[in-house]
Image (cartoon, rainbow, N blue to C red; front, side, top):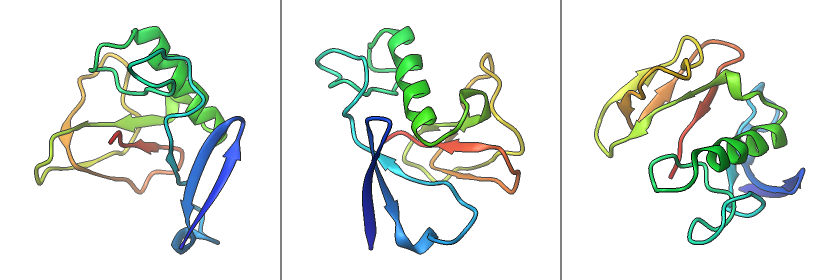
Length: 116
């Protein structure tokens, strides 16, 4: 089962299987951001031609709606393969994205982010 809610103008879909656990999780829609067409407002993908400042602002808006900080993020370049990336700390802004389809962590305070 899933639950839909709106936090700070951002729609979250959460999964009941994580209810009662110490896991902040959710899937977002593309509504509520700053990017114009053709990205449809809440674009957080930096490789599709959108202005990098808008992408960063959209990411900040998204994370804030979960009560998370942009400096906590570990994200990857999704490649549709079999690679797994383990995050022991947030990814530094100047560090290249690892190519992977799965991210794991056992570190508190690390926000795992996948874009689809």
